[in-house]
Length: 486
Picture 1 (spheres, helix red, strand yellow):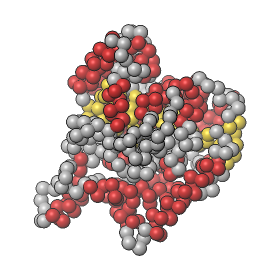
Picture 2 (picture 1 turned 180 degrees about the vertical axis):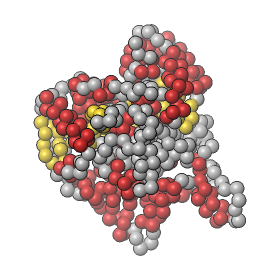
Picture 3 (picture 1 turned 90 degrees about the vertical axis):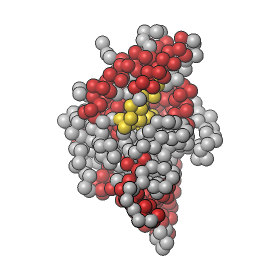
Picture 4 (picture 1 turned 135 degrees about the vertical axis):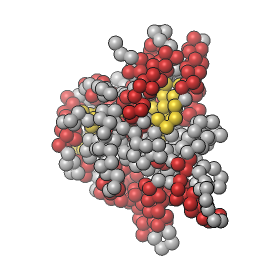
């Protein structure tokens, strides 16, 4: 008999409809799980147990009155960079250590309208800058499968919470792989939707042309249920695309026979880890058994994606993070000599090492005399990468590739080598550069029992195709059903 915190959102929603349980019972089960394992993992920055129970009580009243929606009463955690009115939203940074937004982000508003129970804010890399959730001001999140390992980043708290049962579902944000990497490393499912499919209003910006909010859950069914809530046009976000979105749940049972999946040689040529190679080979075999055919592809400009990303993202971060100056809100240095010194000391003391590194990289790339040599050139490469993908999707329905070049690595292993840390994103960054939807799902395990994820990529606004392919894979495998034994 499973504990309530172990069920998927879809199954719990059925149990709520048939009155087998209540939202209060589910919420209390998850809160008890948080009490039991949070000290080991640090998935959260802030937990709001009393408010969560009140939200659950209100959800039960809505359900009793017949006013419930598909996920009414389901507990969720949101990444600590999504504004939640009156609740601490820190971006895991000292500079925002006690910031309480005066408004809700659009995704939080949508969750509240659905009647979803918000448990708290999940830990992350500071300002979403990292691949391991080690740069958080509040300390690193640990992987539930092995607490000596990183959970991936930057949405490591969101993914680890789902894997450990500290949340039923969560929301993360993805700038260069920050949903898909932790989902893969924690053995859960995560999707980065098409850029513009989900409102970024109230998402604290890292790199505005790359950031995108998306769901993390245990299976494709729960991903579809969350997409149904958060996808849609928002006039408060000028980059939000006005278009109709399908009911993604309708794609869960569609057969995949006859579909074509592309295999970009530039991705697979980089694969050196034997466990990741084995998992990718097994995944191809499963899709073949489902009637899928494979097409060899080339994305010729893919090798430039990582370099271009680490010009574009830091440049946008340099601009976005200029607002944190110790004047308007957030941390202010205690000792300073004049206004300029106050600016400098507040930023030097308030930002962590990785955030300062990226601000300096971006400021340099945008500086007089270097803009054309760096930022403008990176923007042109981005266009070439987008065109490569567009041409590839003329030959296939989706692309299959690894999510990460290796299984999770040890905490502290790459902190002193930024280049090696950046290379963790080599398979995820191109998807953000082209604004495409990408989904990571559990594909297997390493020889020492750590999760390995596979990644599926589709053309713009083809999230339903990713749900279809992921669901078909999960019906043939049990990787997503396995749980860490904490």
